[in-house]
Length: 369
Image (cartoon, rainbow, N blue to C red; front, side, top):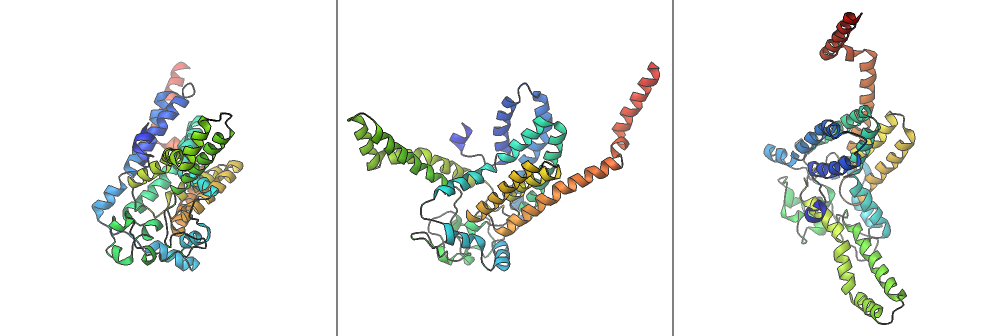
């Protein structure tokens, strides 16, 4: 119901509440409710703080970086990869594979939590390790979003250099149809396919339009195959005249509309680093660090698919993604190294509360002997 009336919950604290409500139901008989609350509360508190990055960044008044990432991308590749990809493989109408990419993109908002839930059911100790790494990666991203606010490619594709000379956080060209076009920061997109716009477009919600065509085709096929000679012809005629198509479109395109509605409520200048890239790669590096190689390979393929999707959809520059991947590689490896060092030096036994418990156990043993 939340998704229906409020759109996809891009706010992490809100999404967390929605997901954990379902997880609580799934964990009945496997974990106690108090364990869910105790284990996941630090997660929730951090994510509430994460959703406040836009407010904190506003209070600091730091200018938004509009040219940093595209300039680095151009220095690395000679072109901005987002522009190049949209020139090569963007079509006027989304092809079937764009729906797959749209699913990959939206999966980021649930996959890390589902993986965390799996670790929690598997072992609370494994969950603690996984959650600590995931929160560390997210915290580093939070620092970047607060202190290095940066515009994504889709925004730079809408605005001209003169529009963002002062490093604004929110500017009219980001939200209107009559944007800078070929005169944008990213320049023109010389598409190889006819009827594509000559500028960078945000494509993350567009792939869901493919469902319209699938449902429209199914409606026509159903009408043609129906044995009745009266009502089916009326349905087919209405469909071909656009009535059923428009109602189907309204229903199925609602998925894309929900995504767009949620995106408008998110921090639009949180691009460096890409947490889409960081957290999906973290899933892979965590699994490899824990010697679960088969699952690690699957997660690695997922991370690469996410990286490609982010660049093509104009959500992130390659620079943002590489930073995210770097963070995701360092954090779990550092966690394993720290854990080995901690165990090797037997530091747990030196903690004050551990010594207190050990002394209590010794006193009890002596009194019973």
